[in-house]
Amino acid sequence: MALVQEKLKELTENKASEDTVRLSMKKLGLRRAQTFGWSNTYTFTKAMGEMLFYNLRRHLPLVILRPTIVTSTCKEPFPGWIEGVRTTDAFITGYGMGHLKYIPADVTTILDLVCYLWSILYFFVALF
Image (tube, rainbow, N blue to C red; front, side, top):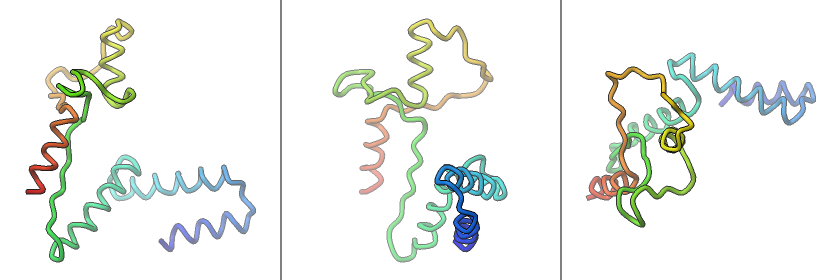
């Protein structure tokens, strides 16, 4: 926190615009994440949250669920339903509509997808 507060103080003293502050903080977060071996701030802060809960595990029951790539429904309300187009759904939709002819990828890699209902069911199973 001291690093963030220090940077904010410096930006405030230099009368930086809101956009400059936002961009500077974004860059600072990315540099910190990469310093500790994470590719971006999303994975870094997610790992930090997991570490925090891991350290508190003596005081509360803990299950960390990491669903794979969550996609559209497999059944309810109907197969293929999703609210908005997210993650891999954009690729699947684009390919299905003929807009993507190919997706550059390693064909030996397994693409691990799970429909959203299963990820929620796994969550409830983990609770009990």
